[in-house]
Image (cartoon, rainbow, N blue to C red; front, side, top):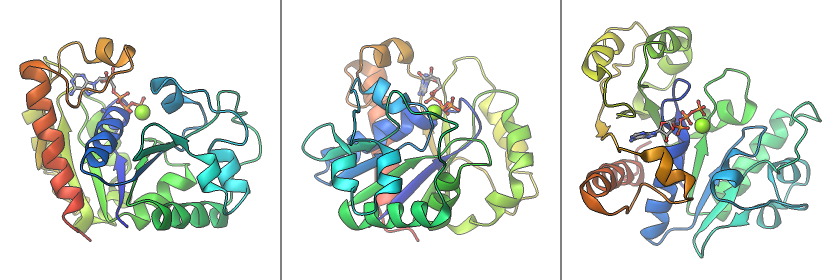
Length: 242
Ligand SMILES: Nc1ncnc2c1ncn2[C@@H]1O[C@H](COP(=O)(O)OP(=O)(O)OP(=O)(O)O)[C@@H](O)[C@H]1O
Ligand SMILES: [Mg+2]
C-alpha cells in the first residue's frame, strides 16, 4: 500500500500538510495511518487525544505485531501513531530492525501510510520512510533558511529524484516564493525543486488549528482554494507513482 513521506525544511508546513492530506485520503474511503516519529506528542496535541499505555509509537516499536492496539483511532478510517504525552525523549531509542518492521506492518495493515518526517538528519523512521516511500512530498519552505536546508540535504534528496513531488506551501503572505523556487531549481542535487502543487496561503491558519479543526474542508474562499490544492496532492500520491 502507498507510503507517502512528507519532508522539508523546519517550519515549512509538513505537519499541517500531513494532517490535511490524511483527512483528505480518508474522505476518499481509504484507511489511513498517519505516523509522527517526533519524540514529543505533537500530533496527539493537535488532535486533542491523550495516548495512554498501551497506545503510542514507542509500544509499536518495541512490541512487533501490536500496531492495531498502538494506533489511536480518530474516526472510522483515520488512525494516528504518535508519541505519548509523557515519552522520555532520552529513553530507549528504536533500532533499525524495529523501524523496518513497524513501517512494513503499517503498510500491510492500512490502505495508505503517511509519515511526517522531521527536518533533522538523525531520525531513523524518517530516513527509512523516505527510503521506502512511493512518493516524497518535498516542501520548499517559506523562510530564507530553506535554501540552506536544501544545500545541507542535497545528497539525500538527490537519492530519490523519481519519487519527489515538490510542493510549495505558501505559509506566509509576505514571502518571495518565486525567488526561493528559482534558487532551489538551480541547486546541484540532481532534483529540480520546482513546485508541482502550490498550496495557497490560508489566513488565520493557526487560529483554525487551535480549535482542533483541519484547514481541509474549511468554509469560505480560502478553505475552498486550500482544499482544492490538497485534493490535487491526493491525486498525485494516489496515482501509483513509484
Ligand atoms: N497554507 C498555510 N497558510 C498559512 N499558514 C500555514 C499554512 N500551512 C501551515 N501554516 C502555518 O505554518 C506554521 C508551520 O506549520 P507546521 O507546523 O505544519 O510546519 P512543520 O514543517 O511541521 O514545522 P516543524 O519543522 O516545526 O515540524 C504553523 O503555524 C501553521 O499553522
Ligand atoms: Mg511538524
